[in-house]
Figure 1 (cartoon, helix red, strand yellow):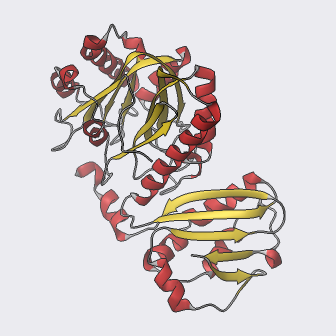
Figure 2 (cartoon, rainbow, N blue to C red):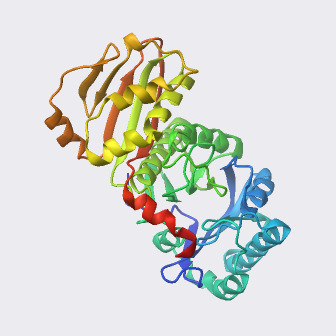
Length: 389
């Protein structure tokens, strides 16, 4: 990874417009020229107004601006909420006008926060005025603006030939695979046609955001968006795909590590499954188990829980007498049974970050992984009064 920075031709701004008591809560991103665009959206049956609008606008395959607010997700707000999202795009297009004529149809909207409340549009209307003058090459003010329960902004960059690929993301709770698992915006100055960009985004997301689960809950507002403005010219497609995969994986791991109340990343890798789908299913069963999560948090080597989590995948082809597993590199299960191991050593290793669990089902060649985090009292404290805070 390189020092985080926006690629050539991209600018960003963030400010507080009164949606949160402090820190930034509204972000603007713009490309100086129209960019090839691809996006993946949540499959939750209650998509927010920005998701509905985004699905319409991404069909053109070109975008130039993004406007994103935190503190209110604009979900379950009906036609009024959809009009609020459209107005946000209009306001943003006006502010981006200093960087060229940006039609409102070329602006995508993102919202994150409490579900079921109308956006306070009076604050957004007033607060967004003049943000166009704040636009600059520093991504951090905008990255802070899209945070909700995140404890830190998430910005990462990679070099691909003469081009840069940068990810700006947020996410800490209400996260489970069903596309896309958070708000993530990917910017690059590489020249990339929309179909190829979409293909690369799908592949990178499938192996990163698609295997991430903090709490098994699929948000109503998830989106992953990629913009490529071409200012750096063409790059090797394979190198670009590899960089995108690495960036998405880094963001996914940091989201898990920053899960609400979490203290460490949990990574589960499964091999020897009947097929990759079953490998991913078993991995997710383990990483989502509250008993595995609390084992990781308490550094308690209660490894029988691994067998439980594997065994409850009743639709998968599993032969108990063949299952093997290790925790932090230490073998703890062989032939479907616990083996003797140095519990004090494993307890010490479980105190580290990340926690690595490897499982071999020994029934095929399928491989898969899942990313998650431990479960602490902090998760309950964070969510018990989320809408009231």
